Image (cartoon, rainbow, N blue to C red; front, side, top):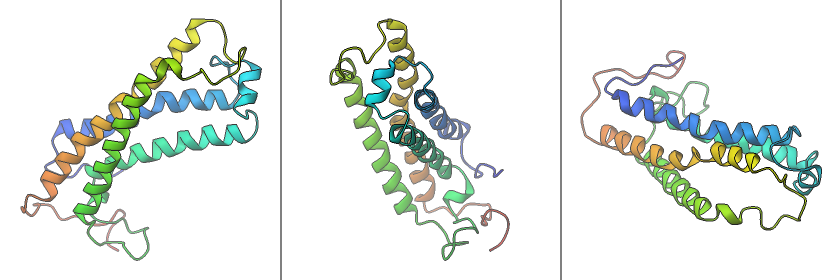
Length: 187
């Protein structure tokens, strides 16, 4: 496992790791849904989502995509966010262009923040397009779903603060005192 880049403060490292935790509860909720575990939808509701079937692949894929994107935040505090790892052909061992990483991370932070705020304000209407009988009558399921999705509100802001720190550190003009090399040694 790679270490945090020297000079990265503890708060930035913790914020980067926290992004992984913001996507985990909703991902687990979707995986449970894809497996047919009761998460609030009736058999009719699961059928509307294509579960079992293409809907299962969709919710599994969405969970994997979200966790992968959250994992990329670690690159803002780890060596592989400054030097391409050796397993990446052509780029291995070269420095990661800071402006590319910053632009992509900043765009992601803005998009995630906007999407999560929109979802927050549209939460009550989320199931309005589903037919009657698709959702269990118990309010417990809605509470569990809300608790699982609430951490996503933090994903964008956490990514934003880690991105700002990365930008300040990489664009400061100071050369780091450490020698970065690709994961696994020299290319």
